[in-house]
Image 1 (cartoon, rainbow, N blue to C red):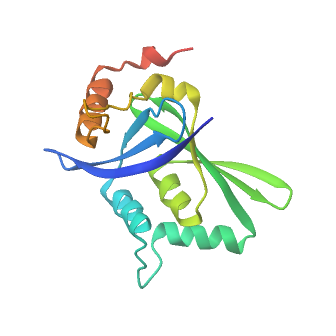
Image 2: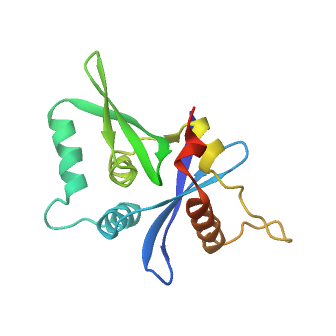
Length: 165
């Protein structure tokens, strides 16, 4: 597993589709852009900005329920890509019991930000869907729009048979 950092939530134009961009914390610094829904993008943006709402949002409720049950979210793992859809697991611990729960990556990331747990991606997923971090001639990182365009090209060209074992 490779630890990732959430570096951006952007809106891909002209379709106004939200995309979250993860980047490897160490190593090659590959980028992993994932298209998400509008509500999840708002939930992630709220968590990044420290926005507190009057009533708990869904991911706040998840955090509170997990805590009330005496569990801890240890980490989130973005596991694989199947037919253009990303999958993730929540890794929870309660007492001496460890549990994995399947999740949409967007929900998992929104929860991870609220409980301050690390986000990981599998090496296999990064090998398949990760993009090299673009650096301009000054040595600065390129903008997220280039990443989104590269990812859109990848998704448009991917075939389910490409991921067969």
